[in-house]
Length: 424
Ligand SMILES: *Cc1c(COP(=O)(O)O)cnc(C)c1O
Image (spheres, rainbow, N blue to C red):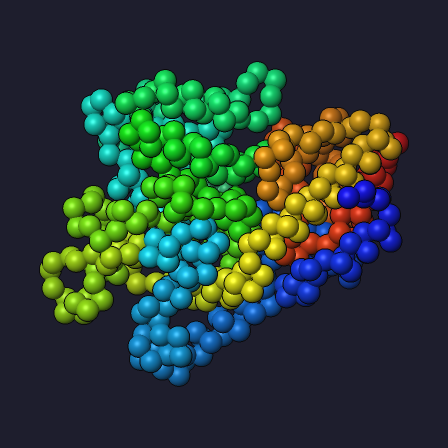
């Protein structure tokens, strides 16, 4: 499609957008009386207008039913989390029984590593990407130390090639080959938070498993953003947070995926609690743990219902729209943003470059030459909410659920004014 950098063209794209009605399903912050241009759906998704209703429902049940709400609320609390599994399974490409919701992301990755990082004297290495999200680095280091090992020996990072901004799949595969039967675990962010790169999860999973390692994915920036087929790819485990592209609310609960082949087993190492044991016998308060035959076996505590309520609200929207349509619009709106950026770059003469590779989801990371921070602050003052990463990168994620083509056009105009103002 031939794009144009005009308001009329952007509005025409919006008029033809099959998802245009969803913009009105979200609350937009306002600045100077105008809705902001929101590029940080990769950090905290906007609030769906229905989420308040879901929370109020729980609050009301608590008010009117108190403890009876566990079993007699309209949506009983004791199995509230089960309502999230089916819509989530569609989003991540899993069987329903492979998905559960509990805790928060870093906590869940630790819990999953209890099951899937079990180093021996010969097989103890973990493969991850260099400069992984800090929490992931801390997780891996502390897991390794917990097992009495040295992070410098046990953690192997995949490097980018000198002068390149992205990881090559062949580098990952070469490393897997090289580490071979010393490799215990591959754990990588499926979509990198910094450059927006989508890893070839299918190929990497296959390679990791072929040398006998477990393969897990941190899907914080992937879920609700890119096509996932966790079951078909034979991924061992995965976890994601829900407050980024999933729009569930700040710090909200995390989803997990555990491959079917590990379900219903009572001999797998796992930290256990009462919500992971069979429902039929749970309230007999017997000492014996009998794991549920789905991923809920990893549930330790009773579900945080007030958090799950807005997550469920958001999942209804995902049910309604479906990942296919979201991805269709994502590709188009990201391409339009890229076009706008390149047009502005031409007009102001090369002042930035896009460092996101072509294997991308919703995010474009833009490396600014020169202006940097002052330009970012100009954008923020002028109604653009974006995200700054040191040393000189602005991350732009036009979430297809609620961002418009007109937003992209208007952003281009503000960016251009900003560059020219800061230069003057
Ligand atoms: C956002 C993000 C996290 C956040 O973890 P929490 O436990 O939810 O605070 C972890 N890892 C990655 C890769 C992320 O992008």
